[in-house]
Length: 265
Length: 106
Image (cartoon, rainbow over the protein chains, first blue to last red):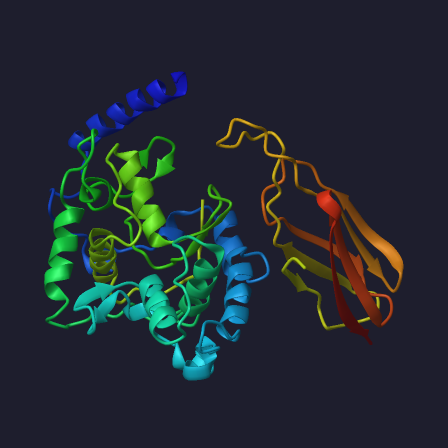
């Protein structure tokens, strides 16, 4: 309890310092050339963990994902590879263009939801739970196939309303602390929040291994974390609001190279 | 068996110092945390790591509950002869994982 109240005080102090030293006027997006991936805010040591495949613990999930990709499942006894063959060629660049529009539901879906749609519609298998080891493993395996590729800026008129919703949520004040995503990640990136550096919130490396979590987690887990941080009630996993926010963040990071699966402190 | 990522150079010159890197999937549950039911979560850690080179032990480590999940280890040894490098992790609840790599020394 004592720790909590101390946190609240430091949070209030940080918020106060925001008002005096914002590098940008509120509402201005970060110029494209000034964008930095979260990995550029990390220590050299953490960067080294991410860049070496033997030390990057998320690679354990990638290996699990590769095994799942080739493992037949469901009523039709089909593996992902039965239709999509070798992921290294067929899945190259896919993660860099998700979330994407799904014709059938007329909604934007993220990569996890696409995997589960494939499972239920094509493999006749049960959907995997959000943040389950198997779903994270498959997502990490797919994301890995796009490593180094630029995040695609989709010019699809059907996704625009979803992106607009995401943008609105990004700049909307939330929770008891009454903070929006933009106030930290657009207006005050590079400054400290408590002891940590505020990154620009570009989702270039998801799903990623967070040392704090001691495991791999999805972008939605991270978004829910931030919402709990500002004392708001987080949206549930898979809620359209979170997918819209993912879509907006990917658009905000358009052109930046994918580095999934990443490592973050 | 637990998934592991091991990096041993496939080739080395005789007398060269080589680096061996290994990462293993393990929860490393410390035994000090309390679960949602208010009870202590039982300890589940890797206790020992050993590396043998053609049957001879060249490196050994004892792990403690303070080590993070999915422990990574890196160490070096001298390449003497071609042969087998065997990495073994042993831990609580009968945990055992073995990885074998071949090395050619010229």
